[in-house]
Picture: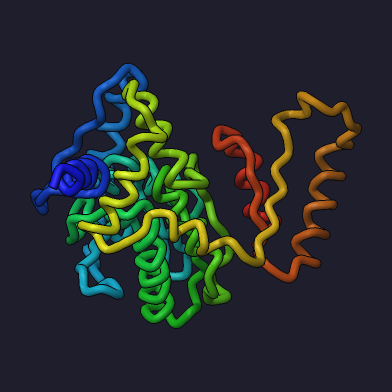
Amino acid sequence: MILLVGCFVCFCMTFYSKTRKKDLGFSLPPGSAYEPYREIMHGWADEVEKMDHEDVEILSYDGLTLRGKFYEYAPDADIELMFPGYRGSAKRDLCGGVQRCFALGRSALVVDQRGCGRSDGHIITFGVREYKDCLSWVNYLTELFGGSRRIILTGISMGASTVLNASCQELPDNVIGVIADCGFASPKEIIQKVIRDMKLPPKLLYPFIRLSGMLYGGFDIESICKVASEGVLALLPESISTINEINRGSISEFVLRLKKIFINAKGRIVISLFSTNLQRIQQLIDIAV
């Protein structure tokens, strides 16, 4: 009985999402990290709310209604399919994202993940079920536009992990890229980090959290690691050559080498770089398309 009660508490704290209002306001988490940007983020959110958009919804593979908002830049523009983070909402986590898309000549579909924002559901699974929702949204766009619109998958935090795991699956040819900002590689590692930040013993508590997902949510949080366990080569260089001194050549030479890689690649290419280097991100997108 004590084990079941302990697991239930762990489940509620980690995976359960209470009933939410459909017309959500805008609120930022407390803490000094957000303070310098609070005013500008509110401004972005207010600006997006006034922009023309279409409310859209789909049915998930397990029967939940998932909701989003489609902002069309032009009838033939590429589309960014954007996912927010853990317990986040499109309105908060993706504020400013629509403006960025429009500045780049793209349309945007910003969605709320299951158990978050305006979408249905009460269980957050750290990508175990969310990546399948991403695939459903891709199918929705492909069926809606007949595959004529190119799609870029975009996510932040848990949303980044969602789109990366979805990218390991068979996707339509019109999905041309992924933008993943600060995603986690392992649910276990990110959960243990949060436990440590709470000054609690991660190795002691994590097994109860994993078990709670199995008992009360019907999923194994570590199963997501199997999604990308085959057929993936990850090349992770050290940051800005702090260890090895090498002659990297000029930027133009670097671009030429990248173009050859893209031309000759038989599968998907995953590139990691600083999210603040917007020029380089756009440069990579231009090379890819």
